[in-house]
Length: 192
Image (cartoon, rainbow, N blue to C red; front, side, top):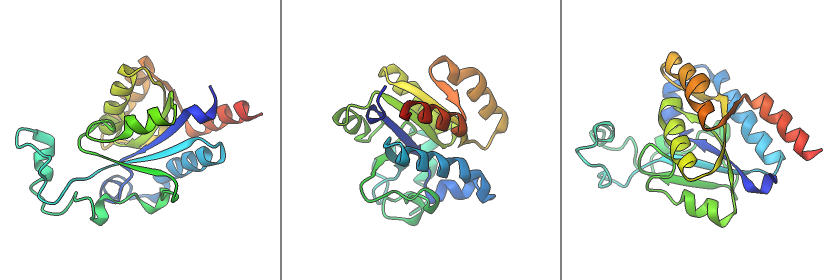
């Protein structure tokens, strides 16, 4: 498949989330490497973040997970520092930043419109958390018939065992699972 039909989704790599998972900055290296590889290979890079309007009108009190966010007055407001993409993978001016309203990168965002407009058929997924945005986006993207790759070492989760089970047992049913180094070799093979 041509690289022009591939997009790297860099998901929930925003300040408020990265700060909870990356006390050791070295864990961000695979993400930085993946973004650099995509740019070098002319793979479209799309950043996905979760953010809301002031007052959180998009959050229902019935949503157990998101209603907790609404109790923090400014934590996840669109203009706040916590919802901006982390400097380690800062978007280039021409790269899209998609704002979602739930766990999946598709829910409440214009991601699918963007992918269709650019004729994207293959998604390469990375992000925080493996059991959150990566799992939800992978499931929805598979149902939408995208060809999928998950970059195992460019996914983080608070629970190492959950991360391992998803990467080793669940994701391979719907996606190729590889490291960033393996993806680099694959890209080199397609470019040569």
